[in-house]
Length: 216
Length: 216
DNA sequence: GTCTATACGCGGATAGAC
DNA sequence: GTCTATCCGCGTATAGAC
View: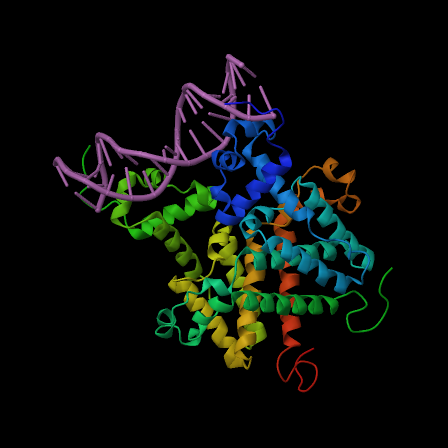
């Protein structure tokens, strides 16, 4: 066995391959041995780049959140910014649904998540929302986006009519959802997002339907 | 060692203890050895009551969803029913946040989840929503509720001011969220729920802002 | 219905050679 | 920076005695 002259590993390459494993088979499938095997090295070599496995998972999460476009925040009017940002956020999450439960635990110390939280909150406060309300809106949006990316609603139904028709009269056609799951989930997300932001607009201080000024 | 004269185990007792383990330490902490130890038996005894570990997890999920009150559906006007149901749904989920990622995979074959899906969908259709919209509303509500129960938004911030003040100007006070996490999350849920249902009311067919009237 | 015994593989992490 | 060797515990599940 010839030892390599140039480094086989880098943090970037480790995170990339680790993400692929988690996406394909879930967080539980990510083990140091498995990861090392796919990288063509032995497991202990990973510890030259990360102190613990948890650091690797943190890095996966940070890379995902770092890909979310935040440019509309503070640029577009807040309702429009909130919509575009929510779509970008969901896209990033949906590409990695197995990581969503981990990401939903909060920003903790991950820089990309803190940047995101800062940008959303800042944009809402700058638009005229009272700080406490801005916090709540940021949280509510995260609830909705995380939930929508956690798993498919439509795919949760089994593609077998006989399961439903007997005992659940209204679900007669539920078995058809699985085949169109992407459209169903996309449409549900858009409907919910629209309702949510519409509903928030009506609550905007001194703007909510009674006229008056906006930004301060 | 005296062998017992009366059964030590039952499906109910197993599910009860298993739920407690998952709530306290997460789904990964649930192992057959651990579960058996807390039940005062040896691991193989569990296989007299459940064929696999997965069946146990299914039973945990079913028991949780079975506790959700559905009585308001089809009784109260749909916006009010949707609100009460969402609160009941969230309460059930929030008591067991570690199970939420599992539950969010969909109703599958779990009877309680199918009853729930049937009741929500049926109530919306009966109220006058077109079937496709009713599906989307059910999905959007689940997104929001699941996301809100997946983990605390407020607890995701570390209670250490120095982490934020330097690099994230708007998060200057974010470290205070952790201490009030229950109130913050409750208020965010209520704000989002209110906005969501308000927004849906405006879309109700023959009520949506063009023709007929409804409350505004 | 519960037990003992057991099969067999995977898990994270460390020490120390090269 | 990567390797080999190794520690030690935990995981699901089965066979067969009582």
